[in-house]
Image (tube, rainbow, N blue to C red; front, side):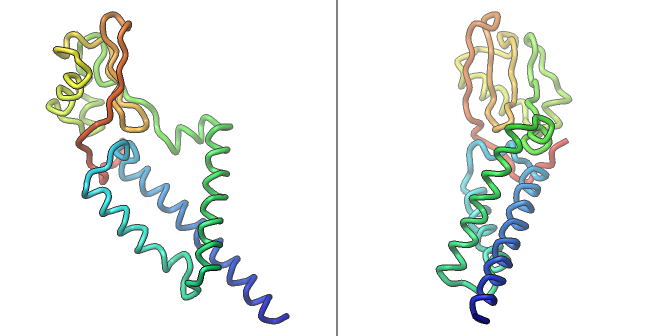
Length: 176
């Protein structure tokens, strides 16, 4: 019976550590540029792989058995489901975690402050406009950087809307 109690405590410890690491990673991604995850570069992929490897021991400690891995994974699934439910039910919390869309161009005029805050170069913006099949900035009615990192373009008096993923991004960008 004493062994069973020790195992329950070990499992609870793994679950708590996994949840703390999960919340830390969510906060860190938000702080360093969650919007940049729309399309991963090789650098970002390597970063994510290394982060996952570096936090593994923090979650399971020396209890790296099949049971420990299942408890850690189950804890992450549960806290992820809870967080998704909370962000669905409470719009303010959703905005805090996900951020808000940013207008980059309105009626053919670039909003330089937003472009600068999001660290998007004019070259990146122009490339995105071309990817949407729009000839020039002046032809764009509205360009929005969505919370998922995609840039949506509305043109032709808002009749034509397209969304393309950004090709270049920086994961270590601090949100303003």
